[in-house]
Image (cartoon, rainbow, N blue to C red):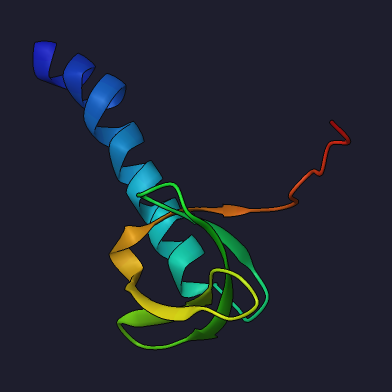
Length: 81
């Protein structure tokens, strides 16, 4: 009984989250905005097999491992501060 509770409260949600993250990584396309595990916000230039070429600014393009992508941003809201 305790294992069933542990499974539904911890293991199953974690597996769903991993599947969603994997699907997001596979669906990355040119022009998508992402956030890396290091907190960098960048734009996808070219998705490759194990790596992704990303643009940090207008001049700097780097390759990062797919495993370092934390999330995809839908919109970057610019605030007038």
